Length: 507
Figure 1 (spheres, rainbow, N blue to C red):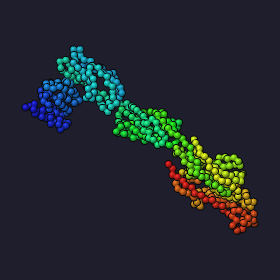
Figure 2 (tube, one colour):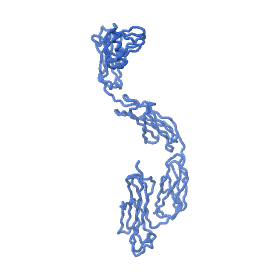
Figure 3 (cartoon, rainbow, N blue to C red):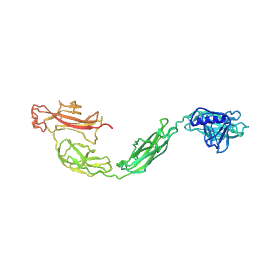
């Protein structure tokens, strides 16, 4: 009757996963579910973790860790270890006691001379590691979290008595950096027509899973030193970090690509970079831009600035196009400037000594160039004039980028006119940003650079003026080519130029 009552208590506690201690008396026989295996306990135990299977009894109590299993059909006596080691273990030699993750510690068991063992088991934190009197503990990288680590040695004498001895160790954290196990790309060859190149970086760490690490990937065109950083993501299905980049239909992409990967765990030094050089080949055929569709102006008469625009080219590789402008100097064409698509070029002809010229332009992607297109003859005839312009290869300005203009005014083609003053108003708020005065001078020519700075994006209107004055006030304005509608009493004439400019937001 005693046996049946105790057995009932065991089954209830196990099936309900209770953690209260279960006390099992000495000489109790346990009957697993298949009724073919019997366990007879040789002593009383008080434990929180005892599991009965169809073929084993497993005791997970940290003081009494062991398993006793048989195949079937017989009565098995379970003899639990005696924790009293008096007269059994003479010494346990340990190679070192200051332990760090990754170290190897050597244990050697010495028994009394009159003790014969049938077996020796080494148990680490409840898990059997080795048999025999010697054990080498290779300290894992999770041992820091298991502190204090319990090393137990079991000794069973030939007469059947078993004994146990416990040691406890504190292991220091090594904080080793994570490791890149593998890094590769696919496919190994693409065209430069927007094909996807995938990158895979397999990493590991002593403590963290892949998904908890910080992974960086980048690529570059092999001839280029500039790495382009990517934003890799963890793919739980593949258990790997992935990223991708698309090839671009540009001439510079007809080359090979380099890749790199690194990983950190926010606790230790980073892994360093793993590089794959020239690992993906990008193929393609470079083509020249098509010829421009038109050039303006085609004809006209000019005396200070010619605003030139060349447009209409396309590039099969989607390369950046630049338009090159050339002008005829007598019988020879020379390059005078360049501009990007959608923009124009303002050619300063104030010092051009010929009376006529012809323009031509072509498109280039800096590898191949198109054919020329031409304008008709343009007439150059200088006169008193004022102009506000800017030239050179330029893009639309951005916020807080200085925009440089040239403010030009001349009266050298009139014997009776001089420059009284020149001003620039960058945003037409009637507050001059620049003013040059020549009240007491006879100044007949002005050509200076002035710059404007804009604090936010938008379209701005500028206004510049060249204030001219008669040298001999008795000579009528009607004798001049400018301001000839003014009365004799009018002392000054203001030649005004206005223009607009678009300012872009910073990237």
